[in-house]
Amino acid sequence: MLTIDLTGRKALVTGGSRGIGAGIVRALAQAGARVSFTHTGSARGAEAASALQADLNTGALLVSAHAALAGDEAQMGRVTAEAAGRMGGLDIVVPNVGKNWASPIEEMDVALWQRTIDTNLTASFGAVKVALPWLLEAGRADIVFVGSSAVFDGGGGSVAYPAGKAGLDGMMRGMMRELPRKGIRVNTVHPCVVDTALLRERYDTEEKRAELSAQVPVGRLSPPQDVGALVAFLCSDLGSFICGQSILVDGGRTLWRGR
Ligand SMILES: NC(=O)c1ccc[n+]([C@@H]2O[C@H](COP(=O)([O-])OP(=O)(O)OC[C@H]3O[C@@H](n4cnc5c(N)ncnc54)[C@H](OP(=O)(O)O)[C@@H]3O)[C@@H](O)[C@H]2O)c1
Image 1: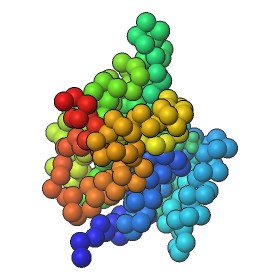
Image 2: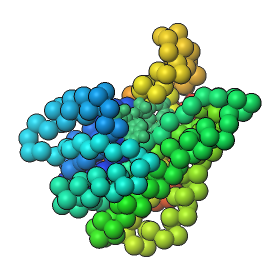
Image 3: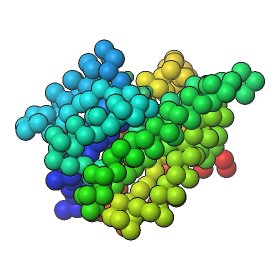
């Protein structure tokens, strides 16, 4: 039987308490990896983190939660060291935190542009940067960035969001020149219409979400597990010849809408 087996792997996912990040944590843990994840430290994040841990930690403690803001280098440095210490190393990093603030160009000031770029691009660089010593030491490691289908269709409600997410693709290509030869594969997954709190901020009624589903040829929104399954596959032996790729998980929406 063909199985995604991540036994012995040690993963850090940023923004793993809820949404897509939680779907990735779930998939990696179910494939046998030890997983650490971050959240903001808010009451909501802490509650969601505890619930996820309780759900997944049925045997030995494999999943741990850490409060750290993705854009804060010192906090990320501290929790990355904590996570690596607890798991006995680190060989998978998934910088997942990102956010779109919808705003037409006329209303977007440079501060909002910068916040969007910092959250979607700079924080992902920061997550890799602080993890790099452990990834190099592992000898074989994976980085999976979480982009967006907005890179392909300009969506997301502001010009800064696809710009920041497209920056991940550029950064991945740059990393391809340095990291695979050192044992670290890099890929980017681009989710689309995933039914999370972020999506429900923009599509806040059943009607709006039904309209959105109707734009997807497979006929539904995506649960976070769709993205989690792809990340787990990419990090496994089954995905080991996939390197430097930018992969849409969009139910066909991007191509179909562009027809
Ligand atoms: N949803 C979609 O349809 C969609 C489509 C394309 C791309 N994406 C991308 O997929 C990623 C995840 O999106 P999502 O929809 O799952 O978002 P979400 O529902 O807003 O995810 C929230 C998660 O991120 C954490 N988080 C938020 N800001 C953080 C920060 N500054 N530092 C640390 N943790 C932070 C939250 O922690 P707390 O629980 O503590 O708040 C929570 O764990 C993002 O990069 C997004 O741009 C999403």
